[in-house]
Image 1: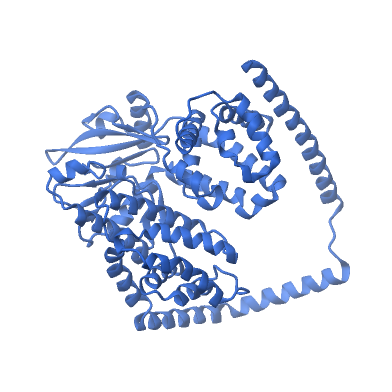
Image 2: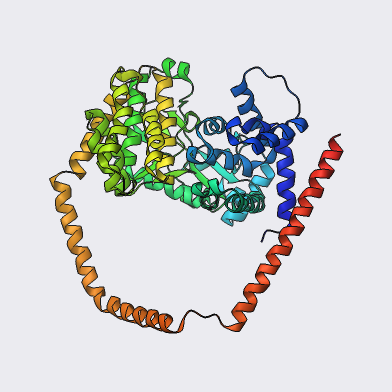
Length: 527
């Protein structure tokens, strides 16, 4: 049961979204009469603004409203931008434009955070810590100087924003309340599992707010890519890294968004685009671990032409099944083997066995054939995956968060490559990486590895057989007892259930009155 304070925060946040016109803009005609009534009612209280372009106005209102609600909602918006299955492709695109840029906090507060986290005075850690150069919802970055073996070295120091954990905790209570209400009162929303989405957001933000985990991600990807051509990540300074502080190598390079700067430095833009796509696919297929926030602001090109990725707060992981799924899909579309693409969906268990493989292959052909009628330079791999996920809904394929994150990252990476070269051939760049992975992992060598893994698993199962038999015997006895005597609660358990139900009902009634009174007061104050 949510607290009264949570309901009040929900009412306040809802009022901000109404005033900014977000509620009236997001509700569409196909949502039904009740939704349209709410849209018109919310429109009466929205601030009036000039309307030039409908889609631009909606994305602008959405960004402005979310930014006013604070860093937790900015993070929620960015997270939902990766879940087109939950909010729809149009809203996901609008949320994708949301910039995680906040006002910086004072350097004195950052110094205090550093000293508390590392347990040493700032003078013992750095020679100089400069003013922040970038600030986001979770942390901000300061340039710093240290002396290492008599040589001055520049570092980047990322510091957690003071009070951000408490703010996220309060706002997460509101998110959970809304998701539970959705599941209870909107049956259509249950398929999207809003509570599970909120749980994923909570886990993601907890990881992002522990900078030791970001440091570990940098270290892991550095180890995975140490032999990769033209790609690297900053080196972590573990001595000056803690839960609230991440110190790493300073990157001197040209931002990927500075096309003129890249040209002036003499870099081959087509080669950089190829390195970007192939690096992303290597990390995804070979390592099962990829940078999930590879937008232009997190990518640099150093003076040697090496691509450097920063900010590992958001990463994605894929198991072997998901990697095979991705590789087979891409390769199947390249070779026009639609039955292969369909079969891998069934093999992975993503599409229920009750459906017909040939019918599913027919639906996939409807996606693939129009694409093969275009030139390779105009085919979007990310759009292909988006269309594929839309078609799979017809065959009861449930959304999987890791695949949705992968698809979102691929959209971003592909978009960056296209800004470098609008005619970049995505398929030619990716085919060598994908085909090499398939040869190494789905050919004879993989069969031998699978056979070895199977023998090891069989050996482990044999060692566990006595314990499994004992557990099975115990379970059989308990089931027989329940069959004969029935399932019973003791008296105290029955009383506790009754008290909980009564408390929930009373609390719900009070909460609805609080919301109603709050909205009435807000409406009165705006008149």
